[in-house]
Image 1 (cartoon, rainbow, N blue to C red):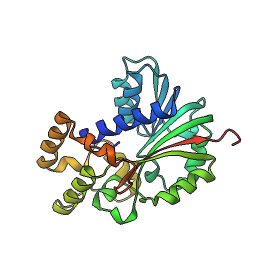
Image 2 (image 1 turned 135 degrees about the vertical axis):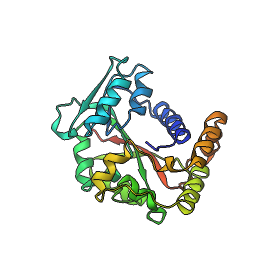
Image 3 (image 1 turned 30 degrees about the vertical axis):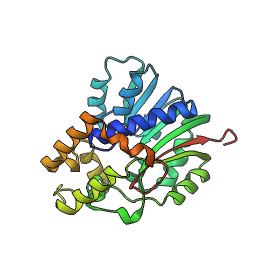
Image 4 (image 1 turned 90 degrees about the horizontal axis):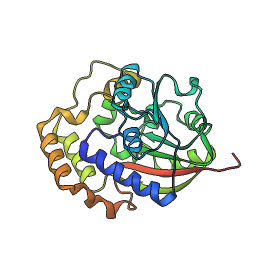
Amino acid sequence: MANFKAWKAYMLYLIDKLVDEHELTGPFLDAGCGTGEVSIHFAQKGWKGTAVDFSEDVAAATARQLSQFPNVTVRHGDLFQIDLPPAATVFLMDVVEHVKEDEEFIRQIARHVEPGGHVVITVPVNPTEWRWDDDFYGHYRRYRRSDFRVMLERSGFKVVSEWDCSFPLFWLMRRLYTLLFPRPEMGVSTPEERTKISTRQSAWEYSRLSHWIDAIFSATRLYLVHYPFRKRQWGCELLLVARREPSN
């Protein structure tokens, strides 16, 4: 998920709205779980599920965070080399843009979704929004919304909701931040290496400015000003829900 506390809180708020709207249920699979915010959020709601991450260190840290929730299992390794039962809901939070062969990845994900089940996905969108933080996080691409929708449909999914989760304030903040602050040196060159590091290290942490803005947004819930704009799709991050068609 986005490495910014207020943005994380807003994303979970939106996900809860979509879960209610589409009556999503467990068991869930949190694929590429990172530090586990989504798994923790739904574990607290009593959902059963599995969280998987390719980084052993990250998976171990997430397992410690979830140790009080026996209803959620944390696994480390290649998602497609682990024996997992199909899930009713699969979460892919800021994952697909890190995968070089993205369409094959989505096809493989479909095998982990029950027929009639759903995927909840966040991805960076709008190629004109490419900034240095995309390089920092190890992104291969920013998507055009229409292209991403078509890729899902070719993989057996039907998109049922598309919401923007960045406009206006987070979109504006990112624009200003990447303009005013130089790209930090990471000491690694490939997207795979940058992905591993950025799981634990945020581009937003390189300025005190981000800390006090984050504190203000979180304390006042100012981020909720975004909600009326969720269907405008003017920002840089897309949240969508897609259903796996029963015939696939």
